[in-house]
Amino acid sequence: MIKSYLRKILVLLKKLLLDKLKLDLYVMARPDVDSHQLSLKKINNEKDKINYIKSIHDEHPDSPSIQLLLAQTLYSQSNSNCFNEFKRYGEIRESYLNKTGLNYANIDLIWPGMFIGAFGNHYAVEGLIEASELDMTSGRIPSLLLSDKYSLTNRVLFSYFKEKLNIIDDQFLVKRLLPIQTALTLPLGYCLPLKNSCPFLDFAANIIYTEKINKNKNKSIFKLKDIDRKKGENVLREMGIPVDAWYVTAHIRQQEWDGGSNAENWRNADPETYLKSFKYITDNGGYVFRMGDPSMSKLPDMPRVIDYAHHEIKSEFMDIFLAATCKFCLGTSSGYFRVPRYFGVPVILTNSTNTLAYYSLRKNDLYLPRLIKSVKNNQYLSFKEQLEPPHSMHQTEVSRRLADEGLVWEENHEDDLYEATKEMVENVFGFGPGKEQVRPFQDRYKSLAEQASINYSNDILKGYSAPPEKYLIKYSELF
Image (cartoon, helix red, strand yellow):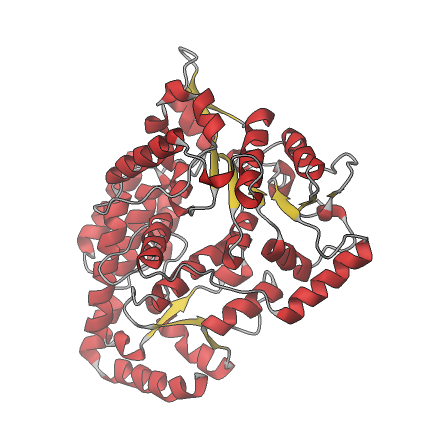
């Protein structure tokens, strides 16, 4: 496929350089975004930031890059107007590609950082692939410019993704695409351009999942290869774990991972609070693999709990094998909890402060948000308030932003984590009432989430997941 695109893209470059009108359009639509980003960093007042970028936007109303910068700036300030600006970006980008002739290449480029950066970045590419397969995108072919200087985050996981993408690793072609790389690269860290809109990433995941259900194509994006299954089973057998044993992966992000910084403490949690959940799993015959890396604190010794983060079997391969074959993943707001889903494995997203991620969850998932409390009256925000902006949107300096509003968040209590784990085990295995039980409080929460989605999108998003029923009963006053 690379060779078939080589000639076509080189012709495009030649046409772009020879056609002065299109070249002028291309240059005019691409002001120096880097310099504006540097200027924004020097501005401390958030209103001044918005005024600055809006003034630049007025000068370049047809520039996709400036439109995107406006949407990103609003998003960083938890301003819900960003979602309409992301949609507007999609319209401007399509017009720009047609005017400049760049649409001729018929490719959408994926930023290499999706595969060389954080684990969670792969999630955006999952959405792009699914949307393309459902004919929900422009029809351009998802492509990746892969320079030989890049080091992949996980080569095993990438081996699955590469089968779904057009990989351009011919270094001659990679170099010649650099002049137009920015223009063709999708902003997958924020939003996903679809045919008629460009929804925020978690909303796009919801829209795509709904389409999968409507078209009865609700299959996972990957299926573990037989050769990988056998290889992983051999590793487990050598550890003394029976081939027919069941196990759960748990990834509890810790402060040590980000160098002890408090900048993203809203994503961290105390692993000690999960030990009661681990014991429930092991008491019912399962094993627990605590995922992560050696920077994490060590767990106390527990029967059938493997501190994989510090274990000799830790490898890129086992990271993926365990995610693909576990019964479910007990995760936090970090990249790893996304990986099991690629293979159809349900997750429990725990200790969630940013509720936008809720909309990315699916039918068999569970959601456990943190409670947010008023310092003044010691009262919790209602579920409705948690699901609506600005509280639902805080992603940067979360503690400070909440503090400015007189609010603090609380980590999930170990009993709530236990009930979430218990309900998931019931769902997976049919212990007790199982997933067929009528759970009216979960239905109420889903309905509430659907109503809250009106604050973000013209399309009403679907509520597929919910917190555990007992959690909702315990905090029923928050309805």
